[in-house]
Length: 216
Image (cartoon, rainbow, N blue to C red; front, side, top):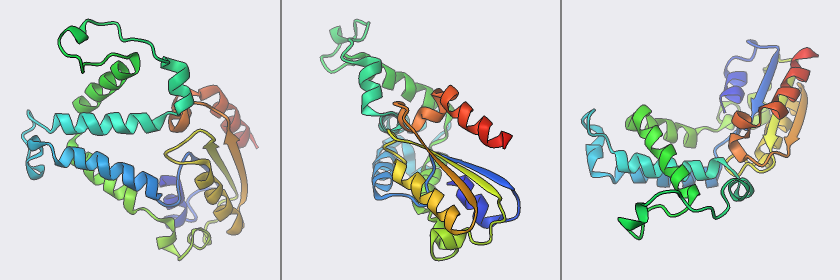
């Protein structure tokens, strides 16, 4: 999203651009997902209409929002390969029959706890809504029109085939928009299993494509 917005708002600022697992407009799927994440925060009694105390933020809502988001950042195939049905190594079930039983649940718990320690809930809510509202076409009537003034010489668009949050067809739409605006564009479909998070963990695959592009 940032790269396409940058190209539209600052059309003469860069000769080459790289878009990685982005989107030219928020999809209904992503909007629906984020709406549930925000609701988890808003319905937490500790949110207090946004006036929560620093020492008592809406932790439960943020934890649930983060867990839901984390699930979508990876692919079902990667979750299966990474965790399978491996049980969690703890005695938690002695305390409650609904405590985490599987390793994947333990992973989500760890990610949620880490998130609530570093992210402000109100910032999270506003960033989430801003992503929903983003539509490159607002800057010209269509994706291509928004990029028509861009003087970029080359663009690399990288998408991941297993990405459920920003699916590969959205990457194709970005590449098509740049091509229609007259920019030499290369579109690469990554076969990584890691879903949307692939660019953070499948570094060798992305490194190869980016280095080759920058060396041209």
